[in-house]
Length: 418
Image 1: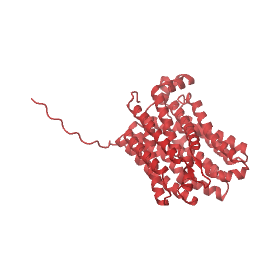
Image 2: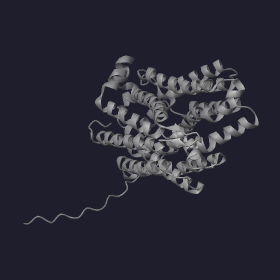
Image 3: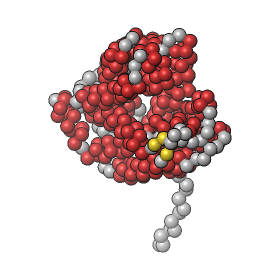
Image 4: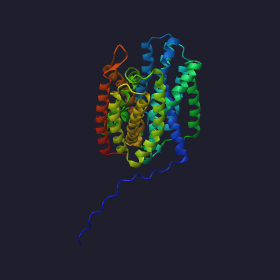
């Protein structure tokens, strides 16, 4: 009896997506707001700098120290906390650090001197720098892999929401009252969010029953760092972050100095870009769950690489064309970040998620700072305000994206996924 001929395979279809329960929707919303608050607090300093420097009679170098103090303290706190991150109920840990973050933000709203504001930013960074890693650990504990793309899609939109909603509202408050008011308003909203978390979020203690969580903090930290698969994920995280942050510090100067866009049109560019990212984020997360996270990551990588080259080589263009290019560029960046976060969430075991995410958050802070420094050493400014060598920054971003994609490919094929 002859063997039957092979049947043609049907094309790949989107996987059926399990729905969220009402409690899961609540958790996703709360985690997204916490991320929004932390990101907005970090981003507030730059637009308020024009008001803070004359109000406190400080030099630009002192203001730069205030801004960088948050990033350095956040990076240090993540590393210091990594060994202890899996030894406590994640809800309790979140509330402790969120309380410290709110107190630091309130301190910023009351600061009236350079020294006081610098100390307030250090305290805010020490607590706020850990919140993102706890949010990631909670989202991984509560949601299975087939739902994490959608979860990360909503959480990652907090960056865009801070641009579209947070910064314009904060600038309105500061222009009508005082630069302290946005920090005090954010602290007030944070208190309400903290009370909601304390009242409605259930304890998260499942990881405490695992043996790895009961080891000494330093042994736990070393066990998390020493795993080759974790090191691969850390390297990919650093490269993805560097590629994402190199363009940001000089984008406004490039738009005004090179593309001839009026300074007053910048809010329109950022508003349109942020609004599109808010819409695209959940859709990208849903696509990652339905079609495969690595597949969507590759599509996002190719799209973002192409748009980075287009963006960094733009001649003077109309405002509408710039907005279109910017929107497609950020859709490509989000199409990388969202599936990447969902994939990396599956790397550590439940007993090491807190430590892994704390180290990863510290690396993101340090990589973001390194990206700004590297870009600053590449670009130069001509006397007329035009940026020089911005295209070289684009080439470096494309190079890091290619190396990061290779590492993520190895990560997706390596054994030991949890």
